[in-house]
Image (tube, rainbow, N blue to C red):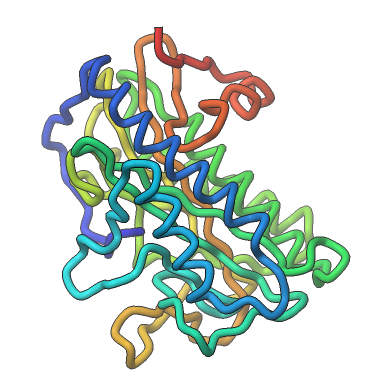
Length: 287
C-alpha cells in the first residue's frame, strides 16, 4: 500500500534495533511467501476475490494478520489492480482475470506487532500472452524499484531514492521507445510498528533532499509506472486508482532495512542477496 504525496521535510529519522529488524523480517518473509504462493494461482478464469481469500488464509494460518484490513474502511487482504488500475484495486468476485491482463498484487502482513508490505506485477498467462510493451513496462518498473533501493545508504538523503527511480525510468523510456509516466500523487512510506509511517518516500525527483538516513531505517519503496500519463484518479468505490488516459500501469514494492553493513530487503525471500549482488550493492542480512 502507499500514501498520498506529503513530503516529510527534514525531521530526524529513527531506526530499528537488530532485534526489531528480526521481527520485521518475520513479517516481511510472510508477505514474500504469500506473494510467491499467489503467483502460482494466477491464471485466466480466476477472480481477484479468490486470490484475496487465498492470501488471507495463508497469512492467518502462518501466524500473521492481514494488515490491509487494519486500514480504516478497507476489508480485504490484497489490493489487486488490473491493467489501467494503478493501485488499491479492490478484489471482487466479478473481476475475472483474462489472458494478457497486467495484474499488480499489493500485500501486507503484521506479525508480532511488526509489518511487511510488498507488491509484484505479472502478466496473466505469462510472457507468451503478453503485449511486448507490457513486458517492457514490467521490466522497467522492477528495475526502477531496485535502483531506488540501492540509493539507500546511511548518511545519504532519503529523496535520493526518487532521483534514482526517475533516472532509471527515463533511461528505460529512451531504450524501449515508450512514454513512461511515474504516478506522482502516491508515494512510498516508512514502515515498522505500523504499515504506514513517516517519512513519505517520493518515486520521482524533488527539489528537497529529505532527511538523512540512519542505521536501522525501514521503508517501503514502491514505484508506480504507466505506459502513458503520470496522472491518476480514484473510482467511485473510493479506493481503486486508475490512469486518466486508460494506459496500463505497473507496481513493484519491497520493504527494506538500511544497516551499517548494507541493505536487507525484508520482503524478498532471499533477503535481496541476488538482486543486490547483481547491482554491486552490499547485502546485510541478520547476523
